[in-house]
Length: 166
Image (cartoon, rainbow, N blue to C red):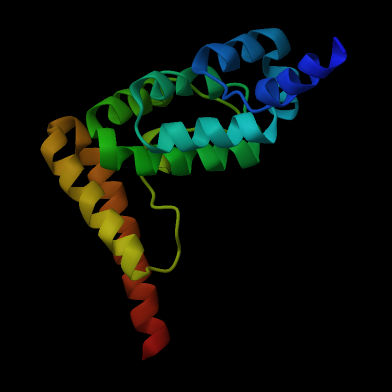
């Protein structure tokens, strides 16, 4: 009978969300050699989701993640930073500037994270792009490089679409 209450606790613990503190502990435990293979898919998805929303606590985790992610995770992290610009441009730009100062194996800062993560433009992509563009314009002069990269990529996509149409 004592086992029955324990069975109810296991699912609760399995569905507990990871926190930045938990992920930092995993980074320190596994290091750059195996963190990317040890983090659970659920914890990684949660981290990407929270970073994408521009949550300050999660954004501050990005410089810790940068040296330990694999190529696929790096791409997901760059996409999350792009979307974070919508909700929290100033803090996201600060994180990108930290990444810009380092040379990590897979992760880069402004040069990659400001490139919209699409190669064809849908209406929903344009809505998000326009919101991020306005966020960057409001963020001040430190947003200029990111804004330029983002706008250049969108113009390149438009030009490619126009060439294909003609």
